[in-house]
Amino acid sequence: MDIYGIEIVSRLLLGSGKYPSPTIMTEAVVASGTGIVTVSLRRESGTQRSGQDFWAMIRGLGVRILPNTAGCYSVKEAVTTAQMARDVFGTSWIKLEVIGDADTLQPDVFGLVEAATLLAEDGFEVFPYTTEDLVVAERLLEAGCRVLMPWASPIGSGKGLNNVFGLRTLRAHFPEVPLIVDAGIGLPSHAAAAMELGYDAVLLNTAVAMAGDPVAMAGAFAKAIEAGRAAFLAAPMEPRDMASPSTPLIGKASLE
Amino acid sequence: MISPRVTVIGAGVAGLVSALELAGRGLSVEVIERGSRIGERSCSWFAGGMLAPWCEQVNAEPEVSTLGRIALDWWPRHFPATMRNGTLVVAPPRDTGELVHFARQTERFEWAGADRIGELEPDLAGRFRKALFFAEEAHLAPRQALTALAERLAGMGVPIRFGIDASPASIDTDHVLDCRGFAARDTLTELRGVRGEMAIVRSKEIALSRPVRLLHPRFPLYVVPRADGLFMIGATMIESASSGPVTARSAVELLNGAYALHPAFGEAEIVEFGVDVRPAFANNLPRLIRRDHTTYLNGLYRHGFLLAPALAQQAATALCGLSPGELT
Image: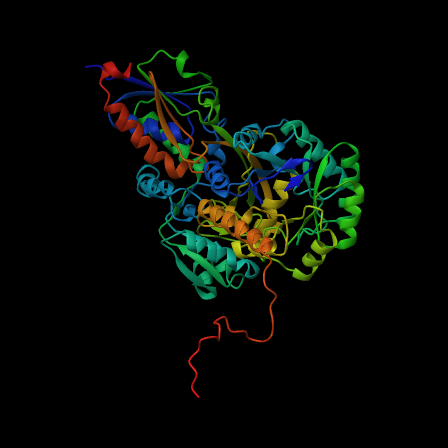
């Protein structure tokens, strides 16, 4: 998978928040086999860059860092956070979140398109956290995004693929654009289902970080995503209404 | 024989508990502290003071629970005002999934229904349908506890010298026990700071007998009752070593949480907002580190009052095991 000219091996992107400790986060990252870790800048930063220790740990993981603008409710906040992230992590990648509703953390797609436009013009490579809306997706691509990250269901809800039809339509509509399901994944089976739909990758955090054993769960997700991808490539059978025996009838004893 | 002199740096909970353990074993102890009085420059001044070895299992390593149980015995002996009324963990009906998760990660609790909740905390009657009750846990008022430990040390002839900002290398003594918390970052480079913000409010409209933890997918918090209608609301956990003023966002989260627990907190008077930096290692577990004539006791993270007794006992045992020659 190629994203902004970078070859990505693992199709699992992992968030770095909510773990019991940085040590467990590190072990989960290793167990997941991920090559991309997202990190939130907003709360950890403060004005004096006082989150340095945590950022240093993330840098020490030896994976590519995808900073995000989690918790930003306006275009201005998101753009400022993205610029700070570029300075801190030395990357032009930014996972763009502009939240529109506090309860569901649903993206403000209007603000998202606006912020994506500004950031792309400023040389950023934007990973927009969006809904499965086709028209918004179109606008984001026009704004300069080369990857789309639709939600499965609200952030941290663990409800899985809430609108399979919408996700399938988005995939069909943009066969060449890297599509990453971001948010709402609760179980490895949810991640596998997204991959079976032909999604290129899955981004998750809470499902691993809040599991009783985050490290074991990271490994479980790695396997599910690999299985889902392999299944997609293997062209799954179509479901049918009529039962069809899998045992050949030839050679069956004749009772005439 | 002259007993070896041990200088404890830091009069926070780690330093004071350690000084008591050392003095109790017959060592000659003094404490030095950079602040001008107890608590002025100590993050334990802002602690919740919950002795909750089982609740903490929800996201701490098993060692925290094992070592923390020692605190349930230690604190009542050295600070009789320690209260053993348990901990109540509640969640709004929408978030009962959080209770299930909490129950799966912890032990030594009972499920409490609406009636039992009302029995334990009459002012919360009718507000929650489900809760977890950890009967064996305890809590204390950190500021009174620290002051009481200092008085106890004075009674044992252990001096606390205030206003001295010293590093271990600059002190002429047989052995140093460095309990400086995040200030020891100058030597312990793997130490990180985890910012915590808290509020103290006063309300006469509500009374609680024990710490109450309110589970919430985004802003879990606890309210700990203090004397005189005071309540401590805590605490944020932010990966940052900044001890700058409490942000409006954090203040709103803390107060909102308390209001969700009981609307009476909406009418409470704000007495104080506090902030400081917890010292933590990468696994959020404490460590005793010996280097030359210094032992470092650090990384108590959010478990200062819970883990200080166990760590202080380990430090005291280790120092007593050293011969006077080895101590230098």
